[in-house]
Amino acid sequence: MSVKGVIFDMDGLIFDTEQLYYAGAQAAADTFGFPYDKELYLNLLGISDEEVIMRYHELFDEKFGVDTVTAFIEAAYENTRLLFAQGKATLKPGVMELLTYLKANKIKWVIASSNQRAVIDELLEQAELTAYFSTVVSAEDVPKAKPDPAIFLAAQNLLGTKKEETLVLEDSQNGVLAAYRAEIPVIMVPDLLPPDADLKNKTVAVVSSLHEVPKFLA
Image 1 (cartoon, rainbow, N blue to C red):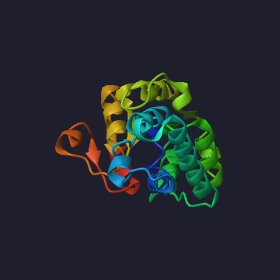
Image 2 (tube, rainbow, N blue to C red):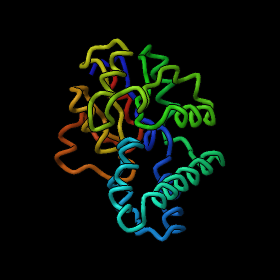
Image 3 (spheres, one colour):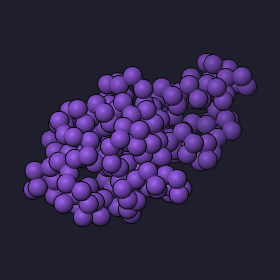
């Protein structure tokens, strides 16, 4: 590939946050007595906060009531933000090495994350990465979240690169599907869930860490 622009997902790719989101939600569910487990959390990976909230209400409103479900959601996010504030969101392997490679080879990059802009900014600031990611596309910038392609099309437009010269880096199924639907090549770096054969076929490659990405960029 001759790559001129790279689009990074954030959660589960740059930061090891997915376990923290699960821990925060599980602790809140235990407090409120909700039937919650990791399988349920994994089914919600890679979608927007708004869609997660809607799904929680669909699952729990009838039994627990709207107000209790809203309180559970608020507690889950508060638990997770506390973990972030404690510095628990560590960088995934190979992040700094890849950024150094991109800069040295004059390859542009951008974040396209389904997270809220405030959370993105908080995590980047804590990791002293704000200067590395001056361009960010967040959930607020597009009408629909992944697997809709809108976020990656917006990121590609900001990069000013052709689709075939652009590469998406993703860890989740919905992220890979969004890139595929945007017709932008994607490399998957699985975090919590490995891809099935069909998802693999929608990628350029599936790699174990960001350390392996540079060999696809030349």
